[in-house]
Image (cartoon, rainbow, N blue to C red):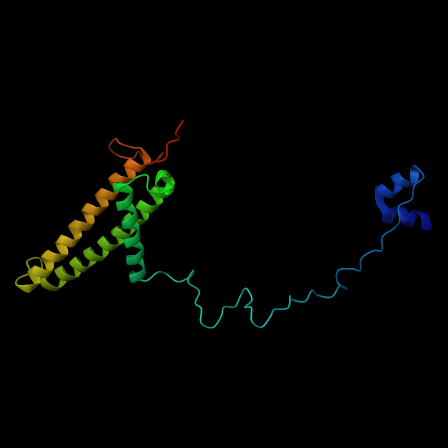
Length: 184
């Protein structure tokens, strides 16, 4: 009887080993899961924050949106890189990577589009306050808003043409897909 219970516990491998005259030593069976004590959390050192904590002076920047000043700073850096690409395309190796340049230019286009939307919102507010035919100082403010909007539109067009150049698409329209063409 003890022999059959060992066979039941040992399973197929033990039966095969016994059939050839070998006996596998029985490992001590682990205690049932409900009896095992819970695993304590790893000790943390007082000077090291745990994964869920941050130091008192540090903020979690990954979850907070960028301020307008930070976005403008990043835009200035992107504009610098785009200008460097246009004047010296071999300046840095990243300029030769179409995916890098596409991302750089499209991020700048996104920022310019956001700025255009803000200007158009301002224009809409001016129209609601002063009507379709503003006079005096309101007309100068309205004209300046119109000039800003046109500058943003021109920049969007320039960046779109640059994206087409970087991706190798010279014909009109993008076709919606296949920005990146593999080079043989």
